[in-house]
Image (cartoon, rainbow, N blue to C red; front, side, top):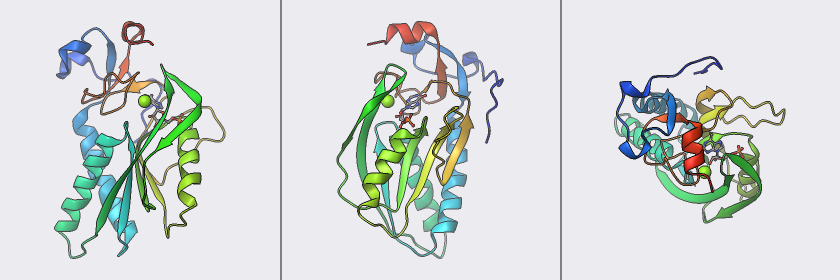
Length: 205
Ligand code: IMP
Ligand code: MG
């Protein structure tokens, strides 16, 4: 699940994507189908580790909503087709920290009333967001906290946070799609893609 720094990605011509993003993307880093397949395996691993515990899934909005929804769906399918039925609650928090493609200092956490045992997240960049969130969750003293993130970036930061489960380790690139945004754009793109300079300029704020 390591995507190397020299991985050229897939040509955009091999897939379909919204016409309003034509000219704004460089290449496809991870096609949608592979994301879903990998998420299914994460669901299986999580099921195995969780045992008989009930879980509260805490989805980190907005960027984590696709990953969280697909992960929950896979856990439900696996659970329904096995002897062991896991009861699940779902809660949501919203975090905001990025401006253009830069991580900002101040972080806002909104919503979320339940204590969590499992969090579903889009991407761990610097890991700063995750640490702030975990500090807040630990106050509720949950029995167990596990973090699942679709992507982990290979950043040079030494304090990089490592989730318990992750889909892919990717180069230190700014990526969009599958609910990940650039100033709220590109969430409606299925594949995880790298945007080009034209796209960055077009949607800069
Ligand atoms: P961190 O604090 O640098 O780990 O950033 C975490 C949050 O920033 C993630 O939850 C994302 O919402 C957002 N983020 C980080 N990297 C990217 C990226 O490459 N594309 C889009 N959003 C990103
Ligand atoms: Mg964002």
